[in-house]
Each structure stands twice: as C-alpha cells, then as structure tokens.
Image (cartoon, rainbow, N blue to C red; front, top):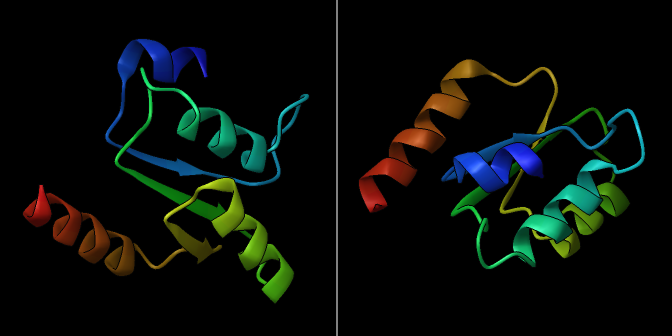
Length: 86
C-alpha cells in the first residue's frame, strides 16, 4: 500500500497469498477504496482457482484472475489491449 501510494501504478499484479497481515483480497479492497491510489487494472495472480476463489477475487475488486504459472503471452496480450484502450 505504501509503495502504491507513492508510485501510483496503472496496473497491479497481486498474489492472493501474501506473508504478513494483509492478503491479496485485502490489498485489492484497500486499493479500490483509495481515491489517491486506485489503479486502472488489478490482476489477481494466484494458485487458487476454484469458483469460490474467483468469486472472492471479483468481490475484492480485481479485474482479472490468472492462475499460476501465468503464460507470459496471455499477460502481454492483456496489457497490450489495456494500453490500446488508454
């Protein structure tokens, strides 16, 4: 959160299982709730792929859900389409 506040990224890739106190769901909710930091595109990158996990990803505010390991070509295509829209 601190890095995002100073950097203000347009795109964030975030794992769901994070060490420490806040998980990826909490990070997404905090970023979406911050008018100063809210990124244009948030991508969950995780090993959790069940329907319940996907529902929680959407509810937390992520735009996309990718399972690890991510195919670099899929990520590149997504970022290219995002850049073309901006």
